[in-house]
Image (cartoon, rainbow, N blue to C red; front, side, top):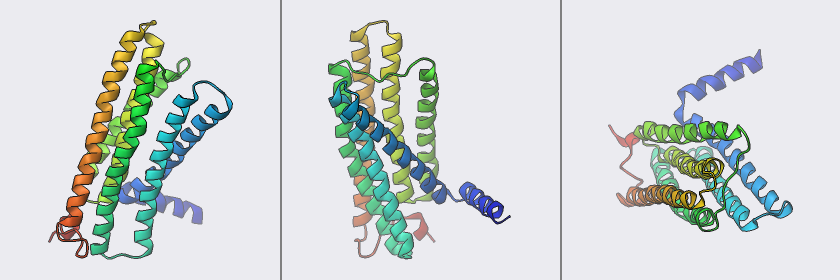
Length: 241
């Protein structure tokens, strides 16, 4: 009975508390991302093949997992310290600024992936009908990430928004991975077309991630400087009367 009530409270909170929901989803995303990175690293170390390609993938996914962990720990620290609204505004702004800077850094790893895909003709590969499942998952992930990032922006919680923006970046890269795999599977050996498409779509997604990161840096800096970090960030919905 106790477990049932606890489970019901968890589900109710998950449905109603957007911040709690984001934290739970980010935890699962972090575990999944770290697992993918570890898989790529193990394949590179023990299965042979193009290790540059695999190490680049592993570095990207580990970087994304690390960024999520840092923001989650910062969020948790604010709760443990029972920070007031003023201090929480500052922490939110710093998390947002950090998230933008980390996205810019991750784009360097992402650029390495695009170079490998385009110049060396490397690719992702999904076997059999698994590619269709991955196509559905990739499109669902990017659409869901974008919708949620826009939907929860109105709450003005920049730590939550940072987590959501990480999901957007992750979703955009998953589209590039899917495209690479589909071109390899269905292009019938037309490698020139595949390389052009990989360069075009990959470059576009990279530019979008760079733009998102740059916006977060500018916005986070603005939030910190508006009234000075000692006074917190006045521009925050929770400060509105």
